[in-house]
Amino acid sequence: MKLAIAVTSLVASPAFTAGQATPNYTSPLGVEIYNPAELFHPSGTWSLMSRAGNTLYISGMRGFYPSNTTLAPVGRERIYQAFANMKTLAELSGSDLASCFLIRPQTS
Ligand SMILES: *[C@@H]1O[C@H](CO)[C@@H](O)[C@H](O)[C@H]1NC(C)=O
Ligand SMILES: *[C@@H]1O[C@H](CO)[C@@H](O)[C@H](O)[C@H]1NC(C)=O
Image (tube, rainbow, N blue to C red; front, side, top):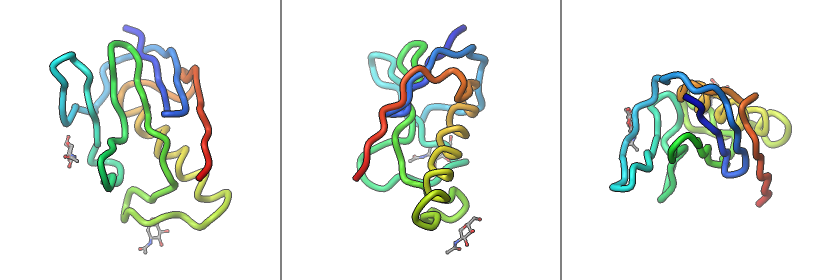
């Protein structure tokens, strides 16, 4: 089964094998919402990842350390941490960053 990845800003078309992540919620239309324990707890009304059909949407996020939900130092380290988190999410779903077919960068 193929699984695509979208990081609110990154979408892919990888080889999907069953991942470890289990959805926190599944909508009546079958959209799965994930906030895996391996990552930090998102504050507010957003989730870390969702899956619709064979497309995985990984939310854009800041560079939080999963171990303590604090931000990595400003600059390159924070950006690397954000991508490390997104990579972890992809892998927990049985996918990888090489399967990404869309990255949508945004700054704030
Ligand atoms: C989502 O589910 C995981 C277990 O799969 C749990 O550890 C985590 O706390 C849940 N997150 C939320 C926001 O409910
Ligand atoms: C949070 O975890 C990171 C990575 O383990 C560590 O480098 C950082 O010092 C920790 N921050 C706090 C406030 O504990």
